[in-house]
Length: 321
Image 1 (tube, rainbow, N blue to C red):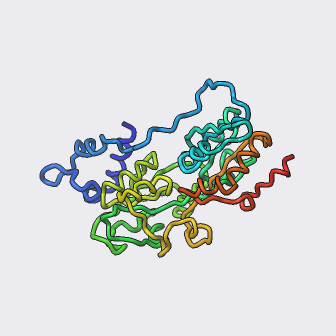
Image 2: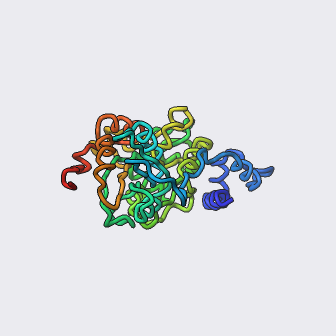
Image 3: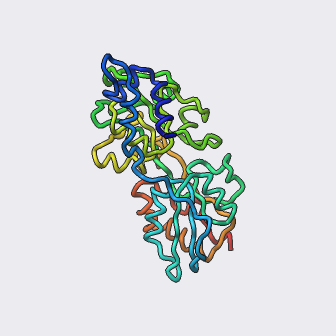
């Protein structure tokens, strides 16, 4: 019900015409917007994945060498579940992975129920500041549109204008005369969230014409359904729908969003993915991070994220001995 109310509020901000263009038929006779039709459209499985499981209050004793991770779902789904499945440390030690958000990762590390806490925002300026941490990947933020939309490119300045409510029609981007419904996720409001920092100077001043949703899957689902939508989302969640032909990514200033463009600085929409921890436990942590920064771990991370090497991460375990 909370999801439905949030989307109702967003559609109200679009105005009647914009909402009708987005929903492509959620009107009753006489052109009146029909909230019951909206409820029916939202009754489906908008979130295709269930909320990430939190670490249970009571856990079995740790197996020898076991590491426990909780934190940002981008890193959970983008790499750590697959890394955990492939990793076997000394004496077959394993990594157990739970999802959630940045604050979940920080809180569980501070109280000792997780060894590694994942963040999708910079550690500096977060509640994790002061904890030791390691950069493990970069997240590619992509601009997604419906595959039937003729627009293929948007400039960075147009994105800024759209986020601030100064651009509102696809015609300004070379598309049809149709309202743009920006779909974005408002999260980590107290942190230096990468997209908000780039487009809004880190202020929560998203356009009132847009839709603010709670989960990344809602962004991809809504934009894949409605031709008026434009989403800003992690490639981790856009990738399956793009590959299935249900979404497409837009180039930004002519640059295709990929790992090479992030590495050489041509693509600006990306963010750091890091893990915080309380103290370095060489016996359990070094084998896992050797694997993560090594060729097998990098190949797994590269499936949906931009891996980083030991040098970029300043991973020098000898300094902790």
